[in-house]
Image (cartoon, rainbow, N blue to C red):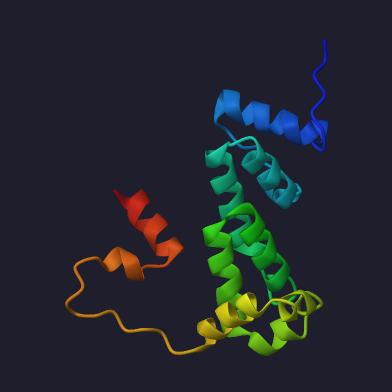
Length: 149
């Protein structure tokens, strides 16, 4: 008997199952629809696959032309690293990002505009008396620290 799974392409679901059984991602992952794979992994609670795919997207799929789209996608899928990357692309190239097609979506949300403006303002200094430096680390830096231990 078949069990229908709505709104999931069979090849993406097969990839998810293969990962669950082998804990391996396909070698040609870079050539696949990473956003859809991330959505499937997120939908079915496969956090490790989600994080691996998110890291792959962050490596070379975010630029000034799609930073806003990636920011919105990251918020919808709860991807902190991807959100941080999209914000950093905006911080480096604000004029290019604001000229992109995705910018119209940001103009509709005051909350997003505020968040983007914070990125452009000078960074807050870490208080010398702070015992918890983790509060001031980026998501990328926190992941580096975790993997180094």
